[in-house]
Image (cartoon, rainbow, N blue to C red):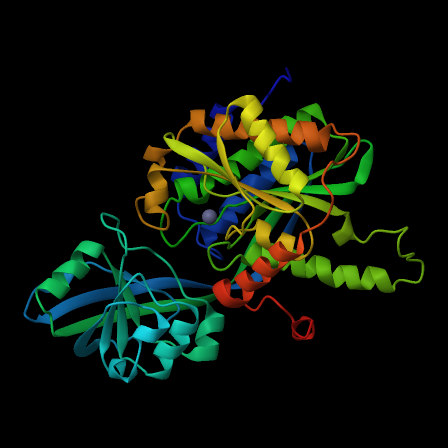
Length: 450
Ligand SMILES: [Zn+2]
C-alpha cells in the first residue's frame, strides 16, 4: 500500500486563512491579490518555481440595492443586485409587475415591454436575447430553489455588449411566492453599482519532473469567490487541496513536471484558465513557425500539457464525490477503478463541468474535475457558503484520493497511461458549452470559421 502524505489539517489551515483571515475574494479585488501572494509564498517556501500571470477583468462593487413593493404596500423585500446589468437612476425605477411563468424563449413576448418582469430561475442564452429585444424596464429573478438566500452573481460583459441589459435583482423563492400570491402590481427598484476595470492573476508553482521534465500535468483550482462571500466550499476547499498537494509532491518528488495552479476570476467567467489557454495557443503558433521546429519530433508547450486535474467545490463534511471527465476512456476507467479499489465512492461522468478544466480540454488537454457536493453546495454563490459546513476530514479524504491518482499515473508512472485526446462527441459538447452556455468571447475571429 502506498503511503499517503496528504494532511487534511494542513489543508484546512489554508482554507481557514483564506476564508476567515482574508475573506471574500472577488476577481480583481485587493483580497484576491492578497490571497495570490499567500499562495505564491507557500509555493516558494516549498522550493517551486513560481510565476504570477496577470490579466484584465471587469470587476465590480455595490452602492445600493433595494426592492420596494408599492401596490399593495408590503414595504421592502431583501434582494441581491445582479451585477453588470446596469443601474437604475438614483431615485430608482417604478413600474408595473408582470409575472412570467418561465424564463424560456417561448414564454417571452412583447407584453414584457416597459414592465418589471418577475421570473423564476433566470433568463439564459437565446431567451435573454429575446427578452432584451422586447425591452422590459427591469427584472426580478426569483430563486428556483426553496430555502436559499438569493445568489450573488454577475452577468457577462460580453452579453451586455451584444444584446443590451436592464437593471436586475434576485430575491428568495419565498419572497417571490409572496409577491405572486398577494397579486403585487407595482414595484420600485434601486440598483446602484460600480464597475471596476481591474487586474486578476493566476499563480503557478512548477515542480520539474526528474525524468520527463517536458511532460506537464496541471493540478489547479480557482481561489476567487463570488462577491462578498467566504466561498468556503466554492472554492477555498479546492485551493487548499492544491496547496497541500504541492507540499506533498515537493517532498516526495515526481518523474514528470507538475504545475500547481490557482486560477483567478473563475466566477467572472473562467477568466484565469481562459487567459492561460489563450496565452498557450498564441505561443503554440509562434513555436510552430520557428525555423528549427520539426513537426512530429518537437512538441510545443501546449502539446507538452498532457493532463489537467481540476478541483472545484470541496470540503463538505457531509457530502458525495464526483469526477467529470473530458478525455480518453482510459482516464474514466482509471478514476472508476481507483474509486472501487479505495472505497472512496465517486460518481464518474464524461461531461463538461463548468470550471477551469474545460478551457484546457477545448485546447486538446484531457481534464478530470474532482468535486464534493454536500451541505454548502445548496448555498453556492450565496452568503451561506461558509466554513461551518467544511472540515479537515473531507479535505483529507479527497486530497488523498487525488494524491493516489497522481502518484500512480503521473508522478510515478513509466508512461502517462492516458492518450492526449478528446473524443469528437466531447469536443462538440465543449464547443457548445462555450458558444451557447457560457458565452464569453472565447474564440478569436480566426478560429470561428473552423
Ligand atoms: Zn467554483
